[in-house]
Amino acid sequence: MPLILVLVECGLELIPKNIRDHPSVKKNFSSRIYSSQILDTALHHSAMKNLANSEKRGRPDITHLCLLNALGSPLNKSGNLKLFIHTINNRIFKINSEIRIARNYNRFKGLIAKLLIDNHIKVNGNQLISHFEGGLYSLINKIENPEIYLFSSKGELIKDNRDLFKDDPSKNIVGIIGGFQKSSFSEEILKLSNNMISISDYSLDAWVVISKIINFYELYHNII
Image 1 (cartoon, rainbow, N blue to C red):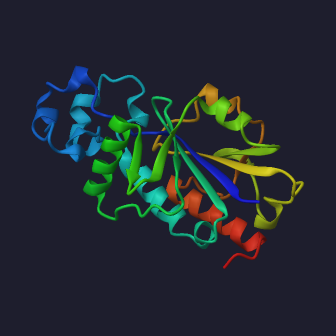
Image 2 (image 1 turned 60 degrees about the vertical axis):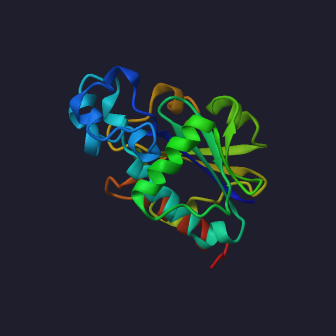
């Protein structure tokens, strides 16, 4: 069965209206340039200081690296990966496995801005990124017989990758990975599962975690 990965609480959002008059925002913002409309802490750090939950916001680069790692994997190329992104504002998008994510960061930000404005990315009639109507609980409820893992450095350490996917093969494995730099899963995320696991002695970046999980799954199912 395909591996289902959900990158949660990603720092993807349009620049909030209440900070658009800040000098660091006005310096780069243009209604004609999509990439300038995305909140990015590298550009807007001083404007973000008073935003709630600011430590999880303005990090489109994390999602960019995670998508490049996931979509370029043998698992995805073999049709055995289902990928969703969940934003800090509780919007969920399904990623078509055939999409080619731009390597250039600014082009990626432009893509995300267009996605957040239009609610989808469609090219020549093909839906490359689609909006999922509903929240995380609705998404999980639509997955038949799910086995849900929360990946966190605070979880139980799995020392042998062969132990990670030993469960009933009839179950759909769902991996939840945080798409943020700092802080911890929100209470909403923690309620999704009691299975919190760690895959390293070290705290890892999200794109490393997603790459290792995919690699473990590939090895277990002999996908090369």
